[in-house]
Length: 398
Image: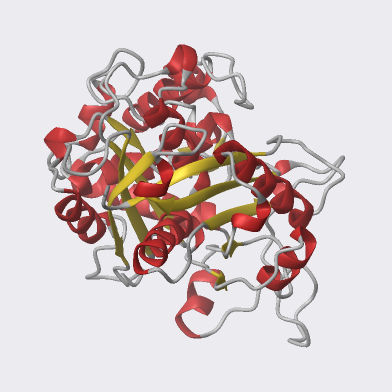
Protein backbone atom coordinates (compact mmCIF):
# COMPACT_ATOMS: atom_id res chain seq x y z
CA UNK A 1 0.00 0.00 0.00
CA UNK A 2 1.30 3.45 -0.93
CA UNK A 3 0.70 5.94 1.88
CA UNK A 4 -0.30 9.49 1.02
CA UNK A 5 -2.45 11.66 -1.21
CA UNK A 6 -1.85 12.57 -4.84
CA UNK A 7 -2.97 15.11 -7.40
CA UNK A 8 -4.21 12.97 -10.27
CA UNK A 9 -6.04 15.40 -12.54
CA UNK A 10 -5.42 18.91 -13.84
CA UNK A 11 -8.05 20.90 -15.70
CA UNK A 12 -7.32 24.28 -17.25
CA UNK A 13 -9.76 26.28 -19.37
CA UNK A 14 -8.63 28.94 -21.80
CA UNK A 15 -6.97 31.66 -19.77
CA UNK A 16 -6.65 35.39 -20.31
CA UNK A 17 -9.09 37.53 -22.26
CA UNK A 18 -11.72 34.81 -22.41
CA UNK A 19 -15.27 36.12 -22.64
CA UNK A 20 -18.78 34.71 -22.81
CA UNK A 21 -18.68 32.33 -19.85
CA UNK A 22 -19.54 33.06 -16.23
CA UNK A 23 -17.14 32.01 -13.47
CA UNK A 24 -19.45 29.12 -12.60
CA UNK A 25 -19.46 27.84 -16.18
CA UNK A 26 -15.69 28.20 -16.34
CA UNK A 27 -15.38 26.32 -13.04
CA UNK A 28 -17.61 23.52 -14.31
CA UNK A 29 -15.48 23.22 -17.45
CA UNK A 30 -12.28 23.05 -15.39
CA UNK A 31 -13.72 20.36 -13.11
CA UNK A 32 -14.76 18.26 -16.09
CA UNK A 33 -11.29 18.66 -17.62
CA UNK A 34 -9.55 17.67 -14.37
CA UNK A 35 -11.71 14.58 -13.93
CA UNK A 36 -11.21 13.52 -17.54
CA UNK A 37 -7.47 14.17 -17.28
CA UNK A 38 -7.33 11.70 -14.39
CA UNK A 39 -9.26 9.08 -16.36
CA UNK A 40 -12.17 9.32 -13.93
CA UNK A 41 -15.88 10.04 -14.35
CA UNK A 42 -17.82 12.83 -12.65
CA UNK A 43 -19.62 10.16 -10.66
CA UNK A 44 -16.32 9.29 -8.99
CA UNK A 45 -16.15 12.74 -7.39
CA UNK A 46 -17.52 12.84 -3.85
CA UNK A 47 -15.76 15.98 -2.62
CA UNK A 48 -15.77 19.53 -4.01
CA UNK A 49 -13.85 22.56 -2.71
CA UNK A 50 -14.42 25.87 -4.46
CA UNK A 51 -12.72 29.25 -4.33
CA UNK A 52 -13.74 32.72 -5.50
CA UNK A 53 -15.57 34.21 -8.41
CA UNK A 54 -18.92 32.44 -8.36
CA UNK A 55 -20.98 34.38 -5.80
CA UNK A 56 -24.07 33.11 -4.01
CA UNK A 57 -23.64 29.58 -2.67
CA UNK A 58 -20.93 28.51 -5.10
CA UNK A 59 -20.46 24.98 -3.85
CA UNK A 60 -24.11 23.96 -4.13
CA UNK A 61 -24.58 25.85 -7.40
CA UNK A 62 -21.49 24.36 -9.02
CA UNK A 63 -22.40 20.87 -7.83
CA UNK A 64 -25.84 21.34 -9.37
CA UNK A 65 -24.32 22.56 -12.65
CA UNK A 66 -22.15 19.45 -12.75
CA UNK A 67 -24.96 17.12 -11.70
CA UNK A 68 -23.05 15.99 -8.61
CA UNK A 69 -25.20 14.36 -5.93
CA UNK A 70 -24.60 12.86 -2.50
CA UNK A 71 -21.28 14.60 -1.98
CA UNK A 72 -19.42 13.70 1.21
CA UNK A 73 -17.43 16.96 1.26
CA UNK A 74 -18.53 20.38 -0.01
CA UNK A 75 -17.20 23.79 1.01
CA UNK A 76 -16.17 27.22 -0.18
CA UNK A 77 -12.73 28.26 1.06
CA UNK A 78 -11.25 31.74 1.06
CA UNK A 79 -7.72 32.70 1.98
CA UNK A 80 -7.25 34.66 -1.24
CA UNK A 81 -4.07 33.59 -3.05
CA UNK A 82 -3.28 31.05 -0.32
CA UNK A 83 -6.55 29.20 -0.94
CA UNK A 84 -5.33 26.74 -3.56
CA UNK A 85 -2.65 25.32 -1.28
CA UNK A 86 -5.06 25.19 1.64
CA UNK A 87 -7.68 23.42 -0.48
CA UNK A 88 -5.23 20.74 -1.56
CA UNK A 89 -4.16 20.16 2.04
CA UNK A 90 -7.78 19.72 3.14
CA UNK A 91 -8.46 17.49 0.16
CA UNK A 92 -5.43 15.38 1.09
CA UNK A 93 -6.58 15.07 4.69
CA UNK A 94 -10.07 14.15 3.52
CA UNK A 95 -8.99 11.31 1.24
CA UNK A 96 -6.50 10.00 3.78
CA UNK A 97 -9.13 9.97 6.55
CA UNK A 98 -11.78 8.39 4.35
CA UNK A 99 -14.02 11.46 4.56
CA UNK A 100 -14.09 11.42 0.75
CA UNK A 101 -12.40 9.35 -1.94
CA UNK A 102 -11.89 11.90 -4.74
CA UNK A 103 -11.91 15.64 -4.08
CA UNK A 104 -11.78 18.30 -6.78
CA UNK A 105 -10.46 21.77 -5.88
CA UNK A 106 -11.39 24.57 -8.28
CA UNK A 107 -10.80 28.29 -8.73
CA UNK A 108 -12.60 30.45 -11.29
CA UNK A 109 -12.79 34.14 -12.03
CA UNK A 110 -13.85 36.43 -14.86
CA UNK A 111 -13.04 40.03 -13.88
CA UNK A 112 -12.09 41.12 -17.40
CA UNK A 113 -14.86 42.63 -19.50
CA UNK A 114 -14.81 43.41 -23.22
CA UNK A 115 -13.65 46.94 -24.01
CA UNK A 116 -12.58 47.58 -20.42
CA UNK A 117 -9.03 47.94 -19.16
CA UNK A 118 -7.44 45.31 -16.97
CA UNK A 119 -6.90 48.02 -14.37
CA UNK A 120 -10.64 48.46 -13.93
CA UNK A 121 -11.23 44.76 -13.23
CA UNK A 122 -10.79 44.82 -9.46
CA UNK A 123 -12.55 47.79 -7.90
CA UNK A 124 -13.39 47.59 -4.23
CA UNK A 125 -17.13 48.17 -3.89
CA UNK A 126 -18.93 49.36 -0.81
CA UNK A 127 -21.37 47.01 0.94
CA UNK A 128 -24.99 47.24 -0.18
CA UNK A 129 -26.92 49.83 1.82
CA UNK A 130 -23.79 51.45 3.20
CA UNK A 131 -24.59 54.83 1.72
CA UNK A 132 -21.27 54.90 -0.09
CA UNK A 133 -21.38 55.66 -3.80
CA UNK A 134 -20.94 52.68 -6.17
CA UNK A 135 -17.32 51.90 -6.87
CA UNK A 136 -16.22 53.51 -3.61
CA UNK A 137 -14.87 51.48 -0.71
CA UNK A 138 -16.07 51.94 2.86
CA UNK A 139 -13.34 52.16 5.47
CA UNK A 140 -13.45 51.99 9.25
CA UNK A 141 -11.03 52.80 12.10
CA UNK A 142 -7.35 52.52 11.26
CA UNK A 143 -8.28 51.65 7.67
CA UNK A 144 -9.90 55.07 7.36
CA UNK A 145 -6.58 56.72 8.12
CA UNK A 146 -4.78 54.79 5.41
CA UNK A 147 -7.52 55.61 2.91
CA UNK A 148 -7.25 59.30 3.77
CA UNK A 149 -3.53 59.09 3.07
CA UNK A 150 -4.16 57.63 -0.38
CA UNK A 151 -3.80 53.89 0.28
CA UNK A 152 -6.93 52.80 -1.53
CA UNK A 153 -5.70 49.88 -3.60
CA UNK A 154 -3.89 46.60 -3.23
CA UNK A 155 -1.11 48.06 -5.40
CA UNK A 156 -0.49 50.81 -2.87
CA UNK A 157 -0.21 48.43 0.07
CA UNK A 158 2.18 46.10 -1.73
CA UNK A 159 4.19 49.15 -2.76
CA UNK A 160 4.38 50.05 0.92
CA UNK A 161 5.61 46.55 1.74
CA UNK A 162 8.24 46.68 -1.00
CA UNK A 163 9.36 50.15 0.10
CA UNK A 164 9.74 48.89 3.67
CA UNK A 165 11.96 46.03 2.50
CA UNK A 166 14.02 48.45 0.42
CA UNK A 167 14.47 50.84 3.33
CA UNK A 168 15.54 48.08 5.72
CA UNK A 169 17.74 45.96 3.45
CA UNK A 170 18.77 48.15 0.52
CA UNK A 171 16.76 46.15 -2.02
CA UNK A 172 16.64 47.94 -5.38
CA UNK A 173 14.15 48.33 -8.19
CA UNK A 174 16.67 46.72 -10.54
CA UNK A 175 16.69 43.61 -8.35
CA UNK A 176 12.90 43.43 -8.54
CA UNK A 177 13.26 43.90 -12.27
CA UNK A 178 15.52 40.85 -12.49
CA UNK A 179 12.57 38.77 -11.26
CA UNK A 180 10.30 40.22 -13.95
CA UNK A 181 12.90 39.46 -16.63
CA UNK A 182 13.54 35.87 -15.53
CA UNK A 183 9.83 35.16 -15.23
CA UNK A 184 9.19 36.48 -18.75
CA UNK A 185 12.03 34.29 -20.04
CA UNK A 186 10.11 31.27 -18.74
CA UNK A 187 6.83 32.57 -20.20
CA UNK A 188 8.44 32.75 -23.64
CA UNK A 189 8.61 28.95 -23.46
CA UNK A 190 4.97 28.49 -22.40
CA UNK A 191 2.40 28.45 -25.22
CA UNK A 192 -0.39 29.22 -22.72
CA UNK A 193 1.25 32.40 -21.39
CA UNK A 194 -0.46 35.72 -22.07
CA UNK A 195 2.82 37.63 -22.34
CA UNK A 196 5.61 35.81 -24.22
CA UNK A 197 7.69 38.64 -25.69
CA UNK A 198 11.06 38.74 -23.90
CA UNK A 199 11.83 41.84 -21.84
CA UNK A 200 15.04 43.41 -20.59
CA UNK A 201 15.88 45.16 -17.36
CA UNK A 202 15.73 48.42 -19.30
CA UNK A 203 12.16 47.57 -20.35
CA UNK A 204 11.28 47.03 -16.71
CA UNK A 205 12.84 50.29 -15.60
CA UNK A 206 11.11 52.29 -18.33
CA UNK A 207 7.65 50.80 -17.71
CA UNK A 208 5.31 53.26 -16.03
CA UNK A 209 4.92 53.56 -12.30
CA UNK A 210 1.87 51.87 -10.80
CA UNK A 211 2.64 52.72 -7.19
CA UNK A 212 6.26 53.59 -6.47
CA UNK A 213 8.48 51.54 -6.16
CA UNK A 214 6.40 49.16 -8.31
CA UNK A 215 6.56 49.57 -12.07
CA UNK A 216 3.95 48.09 -14.39
CA UNK A 217 6.24 45.11 -15.02
CA UNK A 218 6.41 44.43 -11.28
CA UNK A 219 2.68 43.71 -11.24
CA UNK A 220 0.69 40.63 -12.19
CA UNK A 221 -1.71 40.21 -15.07
CA UNK A 222 -5.49 40.05 -14.89
CA UNK A 223 -7.04 36.92 -16.38
CA UNK A 224 -10.36 35.17 -16.89
CA UNK A 225 -10.54 31.41 -16.65
CA UNK A 226 -10.60 28.47 -14.27
CA UNK A 227 -8.26 25.75 -13.03
CA UNK A 228 -9.11 22.58 -11.10
CA UNK A 229 -7.15 19.70 -9.63
CA UNK A 230 -8.40 16.28 -8.56
CA UNK A 231 -6.98 14.67 -5.41
CA UNK A 232 -7.22 11.05 -4.29
CA UNK A 233 -5.12 8.51 -2.41
CA UNK A 234 -1.69 7.60 -3.71
CA UNK A 235 -2.75 3.95 -3.75
CA UNK A 236 -5.64 4.67 -6.10
CA UNK A 237 -3.50 7.05 -8.16
CA UNK A 238 -1.34 4.19 -9.40
CA UNK A 239 -4.15 2.94 -11.65
CA UNK A 240 -5.21 6.27 -13.16
CA UNK A 241 -4.40 7.96 -16.46
CA UNK A 242 -1.72 10.49 -15.50
CA UNK A 243 1.56 10.28 -13.59
CA UNK A 244 0.52 11.05 -10.00
CA UNK A 245 1.87 14.13 -8.26
CA UNK A 246 2.31 13.09 -4.64
CA UNK A 247 1.59 15.60 -1.90
CA UNK A 248 4.41 15.19 0.61
CA UNK A 249 3.70 18.09 2.94
CA UNK A 250 1.66 21.19 3.57
CA UNK A 251 1.48 24.13 5.93
CA UNK A 252 -0.21 27.47 6.52
CA UNK A 253 0.90 30.75 8.09
CA UNK A 254 -1.22 33.79 9.00
CA UNK A 255 1.09 36.38 10.57
CA UNK A 256 -1.44 39.09 11.44
CA UNK A 257 1.01 41.96 10.92
CA UNK A 258 -0.68 45.33 11.22
CA UNK A 259 0.47 48.01 8.84
CA UNK A 260 1.86 50.24 11.54
CA UNK A 261 5.06 51.12 13.40
CA UNK A 262 6.74 48.19 15.09
CA UNK A 263 5.19 45.44 12.98
CA UNK A 264 7.01 43.10 10.62
CA UNK A 265 4.72 44.03 7.70
CA UNK A 266 6.72 44.00 4.49
CA UNK A 267 9.75 42.36 6.11
CA UNK A 268 8.47 38.83 6.66
CA UNK A 269 5.50 36.77 5.47
CA UNK A 270 3.56 33.70 6.54
CA UNK A 271 6.10 31.59 4.64
CA UNK A 272 8.24 31.80 7.79
CA UNK A 273 5.60 29.61 9.47
CA UNK A 274 4.14 27.55 6.62
CA UNK A 275 7.46 26.62 5.03
CA UNK A 276 9.05 24.77 7.97
CA UNK A 277 5.76 22.98 8.72
CA UNK A 278 5.42 21.73 5.13
CA UNK A 279 9.09 20.78 4.82
CA UNK A 280 9.12 18.92 8.14
CA UNK A 281 6.05 16.96 7.10
CA UNK A 282 7.67 16.19 3.74
CA UNK A 283 11.00 15.27 5.34
CA UNK A 284 12.98 17.75 3.25
CA UNK A 285 14.95 20.97 3.63
CA UNK A 286 15.43 23.89 1.26
CA UNK A 287 18.52 22.13 -0.09
CA UNK A 288 16.28 19.37 -1.44
CA UNK A 289 13.99 21.69 -3.44
CA UNK A 290 14.54 21.43 -7.20
CA UNK A 291 11.86 23.80 -8.50
CA UNK A 292 9.89 26.67 -6.92
CA UNK A 293 6.47 27.93 -7.91
CA UNK A 294 6.08 31.12 -5.87
CA UNK A 295 3.05 33.35 -5.71
CA UNK A 296 4.05 36.40 -7.76
CA UNK A 297 1.26 38.93 -7.64
CA UNK A 298 4.25 41.30 -7.54
CA UNK A 299 7.97 40.79 -8.04
CA UNK A 300 8.38 41.77 -4.39
CA UNK A 301 6.43 38.73 -3.15
CA UNK A 302 8.85 36.40 -4.95
CA UNK A 303 11.83 38.13 -3.36
CA UNK A 304 10.50 38.12 0.20
CA UNK A 305 9.25 34.52 -0.11
CA UNK A 306 12.69 33.32 -1.23
CA UNK A 307 14.12 34.83 1.95
CA UNK A 308 11.41 33.53 4.24
CA UNK A 309 11.73 29.97 2.95
CA UNK A 310 15.47 30.13 3.56
CA UNK A 311 16.79 29.97 0.00
CA UNK A 312 18.90 32.98 0.94
CA UNK A 313 19.44 35.06 4.06
CA UNK A 314 17.04 37.80 5.05
CA UNK A 315 17.87 40.91 3.06
CA UNK A 316 19.70 38.97 0.34
CA UNK A 317 16.70 38.15 -1.85
CA UNK A 318 17.50 40.96 -4.26
CA UNK A 319 21.05 39.81 -4.86
CA UNK A 320 19.88 36.21 -5.19
CA UNK A 321 17.32 37.14 -7.85
CA UNK A 322 19.82 39.33 -9.70
CA UNK A 323 22.31 36.43 -9.83
CA UNK A 324 20.23 34.67 -12.49
CA UNK A 325 19.36 31.77 -10.18
CA UNK A 326 15.63 31.90 -10.94
CA UNK A 327 15.57 31.88 -14.73
CA UNK A 328 16.21 29.23 -17.38
CA UNK A 329 19.56 27.60 -16.66
CA UNK A 330 19.59 28.94 -13.10
CA UNK A 331 20.26 27.02 -9.92
CA UNK A 332 16.66 27.35 -8.65
CA UNK A 333 14.14 27.30 -11.54
CA UNK A 334 11.29 29.49 -10.31
CA UNK A 335 7.87 30.16 -11.82
CA UNK A 336 8.75 28.08 -14.84
CA UNK A 337 5.50 28.74 -16.66
CA UNK A 338 5.78 32.52 -16.46
CA UNK A 339 3.88 32.90 -13.21
CA UNK A 340 1.22 35.52 -12.64
CA UNK A 341 3.54 38.24 -13.90
CA UNK A 342 3.62 36.92 -17.47
CA UNK A 343 1.52 33.74 -17.89
CA UNK A 344 -1.89 34.04 -16.24
CA UNK A 345 -3.40 35.18 -12.95
CA UNK A 346 -5.46 32.42 -11.36
CA UNK A 347 -4.56 33.19 -7.76
CA UNK A 348 -2.85 30.22 -6.07
CA UNK A 349 -3.85 27.92 -8.91
CA UNK A 350 -1.19 29.56 -11.09
CA UNK A 351 1.78 28.18 -9.12
CA UNK A 352 -0.06 24.95 -8.33
CA UNK A 353 -0.89 24.14 -11.95
CA UNK A 354 2.70 24.72 -13.03
CA UNK A 355 3.94 22.53 -10.18
CA UNK A 356 1.75 19.69 -11.44
CA UNK A 357 3.02 20.17 -14.99
CA UNK A 358 6.65 20.19 -13.86
CA UNK A 359 6.30 17.23 -11.50
CA UNK A 360 4.71 15.20 -14.30
CA UNK A 361 7.54 16.10 -16.64
CA UNK A 362 5.07 17.70 -19.05
CA UNK A 363 6.73 21.13 -19.27
CA UNK A 364 7.99 20.75 -22.82
CA UNK A 365 10.49 23.45 -23.72
CA UNK A 366 10.34 24.86 -20.19
CA UNK A 367 10.69 21.56 -18.35
CA UNK A 368 13.20 21.67 -15.49
CA UNK A 369 15.79 18.91 -15.79
CA UNK A 370 15.52 18.03 -12.11
CA UNK A 371 12.03 18.10 -10.65
CA UNK A 372 11.95 15.51 -7.90
CA UNK A 373 10.84 17.98 -5.22
CA UNK A 374 8.71 21.02 -6.05
CA UNK A 375 7.72 23.78 -3.62
CA UNK A 376 4.41 25.59 -4.19
CA UNK A 377 3.74 28.87 -2.42
CA UNK A 378 0.52 30.85 -2.06
CA UNK A 379 0.16 34.36 -0.63
CA UNK A 380 -3.22 35.84 0.26
CA UNK A 381 -4.75 39.15 1.19
CA UNK A 382 -1.99 41.70 1.65
CA UNK A 383 0.57 39.33 3.17
CA UNK A 384 -2.15 38.12 5.57
CA UNK A 385 -2.23 34.44 4.57
CA UNK A 386 0.29 31.93 3.29
CA UNK A 387 0.17 28.30 2.19
CA UNK A 388 2.96 25.92 1.25
CA UNK A 389 2.85 22.57 -0.52
CA UNK A 390 5.71 20.16 -1.20
CA UNK A 391 4.92 17.85 -4.13
CA UNK A 392 6.86 15.21 -6.03
CA UNK A 393 6.48 12.68 -8.84
CA UNK A 394 7.66 10.06 -6.33
CA UNK A 395 5.72 8.49 -3.46
CA UNK A 396 6.72 9.92 -0.12
CA UNK A 397 9.74 8.23 1.37
CA UNK A 398 11.04 6.92 -1.97
